[in-house]
Length: 380
Length: 238
Image (cartoon, rainbow over all chains, first blue to last red; front, side, top):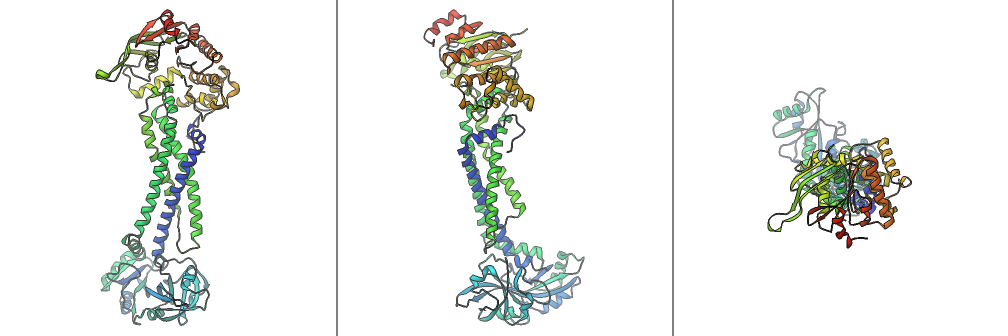
């Protein structure tokens, strides 16, 4: 266990001696870490889910109608813009792409919202990934769609060949993906571009996006700027910028992310309060011992270290248990439509936050000991 | 050679204005190395206040206190721990042992505070425990020791850093007569063998037999001599 090169590991001994209090402290930290990790993991999961279609598109630049703020509500433009884009030096390809909300009628007649994703099968951009049943190439068949198996029950289908309707037009399952989640309640349904136009009632000359590939060595941001100058009425953004705008819209523009972050913050606050209370109570219980240390000639720094060591030991123990539970929850969430993602930078950051939180919580105790009159040791 | 502790015209007043309490009034006292000084007096007479001032725990309102030649009165708070670490060991009425630590760890604590760590420091703590007759109790926790044993651990702790002065506040108050005598003998031997100055605050009349000098304090004023203390002891003898 953690101690700072001491002849007498007083901090650890004190914690071990007050087992019940140590257990209460650990419990407070565990739940604080667990709550914060899950909320932050949800935030990361939601954030990624808002932009999965963009992140996996493989495009360098996304072109859309001017004024469109987020992925799902793009305004159509004529495909002839595609030829204008292709004429911009540095553009290798510009392929039509559709993403828009639609209505899915289950075989039992129930309605569900979906996100229709129409891809250009020849381009290779914007295709579904993690296909576990069927083939992307099967989308060239009439009415063919690919859905994620996480949403099979929601969509009322179970196997390849099952049928439903999208906006009243027949849809037939030709494949399943695994783990493509939606931030909204509308799961992505992949189909080929022409089929998506039919589902969404768009003219054959219309599209919602162009997915652009830049020539090797051409800087995407600079090329996006040139496309905007060359083609009127459109916005061109690099995939990274568009993903950021989409994530910002859903997480902060709608307030959804703020709610999750507030919950995470409250989790940390609860942890600080619990730890502060228990460490303070422990300090008060040991106040005569701290007075004795002062009488022995211990400096304030020595005593602070004992208190902070107690806080750090509690933090490390509570973090280890809490994070183990959070990672278990994260692993279990992979089977559901709401993913709790705990990337290692978040895991490391939470360690620092937990230790910092516990050290912060010990300041009240340090203040108490600083004001301690060592003459307390003579009171019998 | 200067005395181990030289107290000169020390006064201590708690509070200010009409509610001020004068705990010590113009007290002067020297304690030599190797001497056992007994300080007696009724409760509230100022004994513990004087002990606290001699140990650099309280600051005097006026006067001078020199510990091994270093002036304590007016010394900044941050300087006092160094004086206590170097020169002074304390023995308390309530033992003030750390319940979470073993006897050995309790004794080793002053060394840890001084930054002395490693096997040699541990060995010093073990030797100090053996010296007070508790070599077989190094792994025991205070809860597993008798009152007399606890006080002997506390004495070992006070001595492990080899201080030249030991200040003991009612060291026998919580002990039975046998244990009390053993502790007094131990303190006297420690004064004799290493030339330490031992200042003993007590109500225990048995302690007079182990003292080289007895002073009494009454209403904050010091009186020298056992005969002065005798009337005070009449009602306080165990």
